[in-house]
Image 1 (cartoon, rainbow, N blue to C red):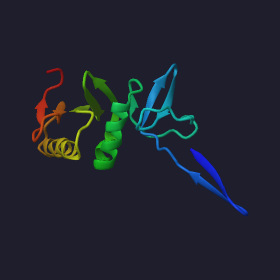
Image 2: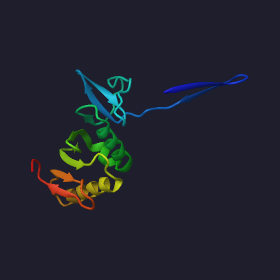
Image 3: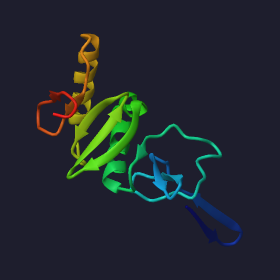
Image 4: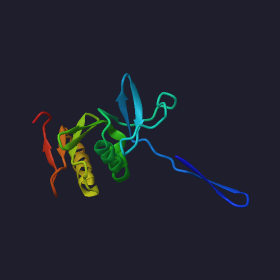
Length: 145
């Protein structure tokens, strides 16, 4: 986004606002870049392929949560390969593990699922799904349960 204003007698002021992509979304047979508000960005991701999660469909709740995860737990964001909405919740797939969160998940809930994930990995346990939707707790369940 760009805005040009003029200050007399001879000054031009140019203001640029860059929008950062947060995910890739399928659109027809192509993948398009999407920002955190769910808006498709006018860039071709094949020119400079980004390392971003793929969302199943354009959804501002999913991309909004991804933006929050990126700011709170960049290590988790870098592991997320896909994200999608299941009813009122968001599921993130990271290295074969699933993280289930509310779309408005607080930083504490995002940090909590990451801490539990790291602890279980250290202990040699497999993380099938970590559910951080409930205040003050993370539920660990096998995939498909």
